[in-house]
View 1 (cartoon, one colour):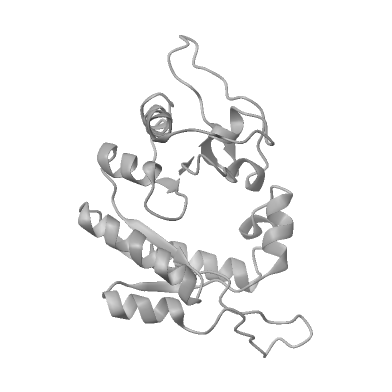
View 2: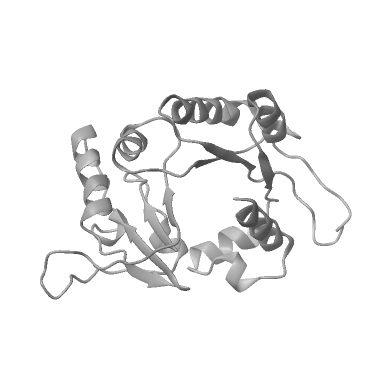
Length: 212
């Protein structure tokens, strides 16, 4: 499995995977070798610029970088290349749909209407360019306090992702609960499926990955 971080303006994959530093080149200098953590190969603009440097790039530059990540990185034999895209219908998403034979798109949203507006736009963009929609994931669906495991608090509203999935006739892949450990461990470069594999959040993520 590989992860291509196509969020040029806000790359988060390096921190969440506990990776840093510039990637190495192949011996002939023609290709870049992806970094690797937890058996997953990763490539991100975050490896190439300092963390606090803003990316003030116009569309053609984003297009060029995404193209390089696809063609100039020696990914090797992969079963899956997961592309982490920014929200919306911007340059990175359009470049990918033009350059790569995408097997499908997963739309991630929260339950509230404001987030669902973006989710609908993204979904319809992929449909227009002929990319199959694998389904919708609802993130931060509910919060369960540690001292009250039977309670669920729907902070962003209830069932929005499932409602949009039915409305647009695409699969609903599942809900990921709010879990402070996801943020805490992500900041430390330890994905929760590694650091807390038996947690409800990890189980939800495993189920969704299986559906995908």
